[in-house]
Length: 313
Length: 296
Image 1 (tube, chains in turn purple, orange):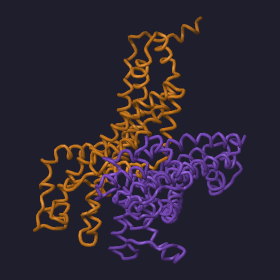
Image 2 (spheres, helix red, strand yellow):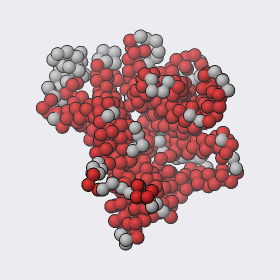
Image 3 (cartoon, chains in turn blue, red):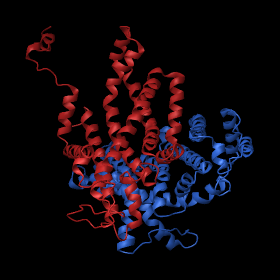
């Protein structure tokens, strides 16, 4: 198992290296001279030359990359041009908000997706299976920003039950925090619920056809015991792994959801940065999300190895 | 000897010519009601996009200060927007941006991804390692965040949004093509093609590519759905289609500000995105089952 994990860790190195190259190269796509962009209104050649020296823009690309990655390794993601604060501080401030949202979304997705998937597999080829499948496809096909707008229209504008925007930290007021995040969490979890439902259904169908379920049936166990204790328990491993992997997708979806519900998280940070041409922040956010995704991938692998004794050689 | 004679094939004249795999797939697809309904809806949307000037009752950009935020009626089927433009006409014209973005970005992704995947899978060795690690790295960056970053760095426009989505979706096709090539290249007919002296290029394009096309087609259909949502998302954020040209995403962005007194502005463009994406997903599902010979 140690050998397997070490191999997996070694494989991460080139991936992380390429991620950093991609993110570094993003800046090279900027139309025009970055020094001119940074100088803004000030077109004094002296100032521009100074900026070029300061940010090492006068150096060849590989050297610029080495300086940039050296900073990244020690946690220096650069400075926000607009807010004049380190990008790492901004990331640390906004990340917990998005993590709260993503965690709630995972709970929503697991609750809906796994329940619907089990139901669909148990009632295979019945009208329930058909309806659940259609609903899952609808969930996957609904753009989350539109779903968000529709929920605001219903629950905030028409019924007045939930606040349309804003965010309260759970450490300040837990009840209020749940009220402000329940709609965005549902919006974010909705598409994932559709994906999880499909995977749960497939995993459950496979489990229901297996020898150990047949043995459980032969022993005369009740249907509920067979489904919950035998089939679902075995089907859950791939579902949890998938859930971990989809966390990255949730971070992506949070961009629009946070924008609609005006939640001051990671997604809103990147959108604001895009519009203010604060490229260091954009790079920092992409780097942190990609690294989080890679680490989650690794954790999912470890979880998989721990859950399946056959992989622990 | 007698037994061997019994299993001899019947004379060739009595055997009906085998149906082509594409024909068999089409027959299987026709049996799938959901996929056929989806295909019908898609054809209607494509028809509406192509013949938008003939179908739309009004000019989609024409403002009318006497018809600001009118509710849906016989005169304005989907109501009007904040400057009195007809929503129905804008939704019809908006289909052009969405479909174009979906198809063109997938063409970019397929055009870049399939050759790279073919190269990686067929050549193996360091070429494969390099391409695969780069693909892994791109897949590690969440799709929409990378597309937003790319679109932001390239500058806001529909063309740049399509490039951003296309480039971001490329690794999906690299990985799929590579995987399929690895499966196909060990088949006997590839070995046969190699043994009679075919060049590597000919084997890759004439023997491997046609055999992996069905899988690529299915993935392309499903990715069009993803690309349409991504374009709508970028336009919603102001990074795609620029005003006054209509796009479903940018229409939703404006509609957000008028939810209380003009909810129809948010409903119809969203329904249009939903119906198009659902149809592509349903059709993609049907196509997958129809092209898989093991499916019932």
